[in-house]
Length: 258
Image (cartoon, rainbow, N blue to C red; front, side, top):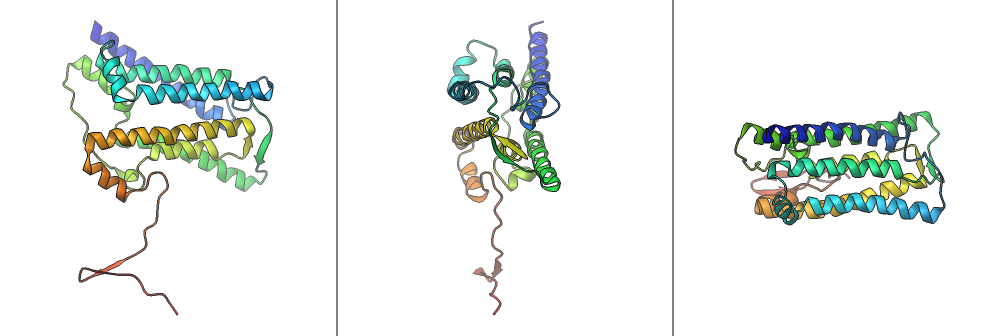
């Protein structure tokens, strides 16, 4: 019965996340939902900035603290280890709901793209960014990332095996495609208000902080293998390497035309 309840808890957390994340995409994009980043009662600027800053900080602190190995080690003395990731996801859901519910709009326009084609391109990049974030999670292990694999393994009473280091597809181009997609989705928008700018800036700053701690953990887990990968593959933005011709173990650059 305990194993079934753990499985049910993980499934509820995951299904809840799907709904919250889809709502968050619409919240950022400003469409299809009753409460968006630009809607709601307008409050005094200092009050709005303070509330929004606290909401972003709450999200950032929860992610930064609960994702660390030291916290996990202590946390799993209180709850079953198989529930650790699902609990992380569940608390993230609650914080995102709070953020979207209590977000204070700042309607001042930072930029507004009126051209139909340019606006469509930006919305296309917006969708592509969030699609990249979701796709990247499936390229590694989507169900482990969101806790389902752990609770299922507990239900089946299977042993845990540490996932191997792998760099499928887009991970050969950039090291953090999920974060890159999130950043693109936050910024590629035709109408950028001051409130949206605060959200995009705050979340982007957190993403860079989160990457720092994540890479530190990856180096601890995979050692020199990850250090070599970090040297070869850029963090967030693909880099086109200059073409080189190898002849007799001597590197020769293509000659410039006169």
